[in-house]
Amino acid sequence: MRGSRLVPLLTFAVSAVALAVISLGFFQKAEAPRGLVVDETIASIGGPFELTTHQGERLTDQDLRGSPFAVFFGFTFCPEVCPTTLWEMTDALQSLGDDAANLKVLFITVDPERDTPEALERYLQSFDPRITGLTGTPEEIEAVSETYRVFSRKVPIDGGDYTMDHTATTYLMDSNGRFTSTISYEEQKQTRMEKLRLLAGR
Ligand code: NI
Image (cartoon, rainbow, N blue to C red; front, side, top):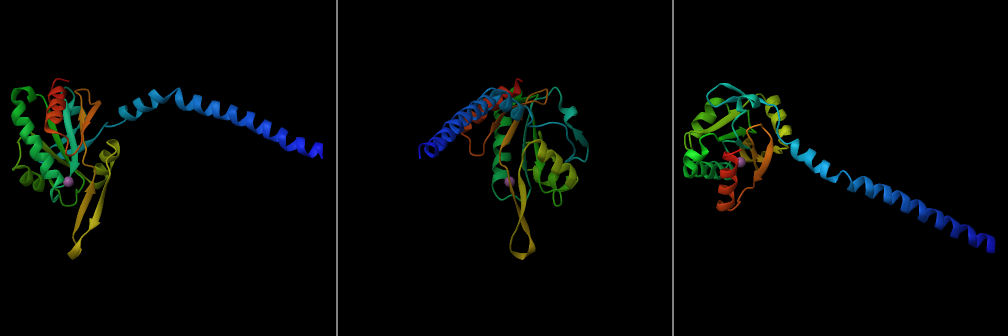
């Protein structure tokens, strides 16, 4: 009787110690590099790309060195998010004036099938001429979307047509092409303007 009672107790004690050691190890592992993990995630937003502008020229991330830029992803058939963001960018560029002289704004399509350079050019006529539209092959668009951790997907609609779901975040990159911050959709005008003004000086 006694022996059989002792065994589970011992087992419990050993398990508890083992669990404590494992937990300690786990938490040490989880805690120590936490800062690094976050930094790596942030640092890994953005990176090399090669795309075609709405004027039919090739543009790479290297061409943008020396200029801070705001970049967001969308498509010209977008009913709301993209035109709103483009309008807000137009408004911001106009308010910032000379402060934004070095600032670039990029609009990268997630719908390269329909958004040819010509389609982008037509579409962007409604917005500030400093906004650059970018398209590419489906592979180039997929690559740049991965680089920026942007999600998009085709959603079929009535009549065999489709729309796109996509990330609505604007990414703010400094003049070395490094990620600095984001502007979320429906961010307050004041904070949006502060972030862009700050970015223009980076
Ligand atoms: Ni959109």
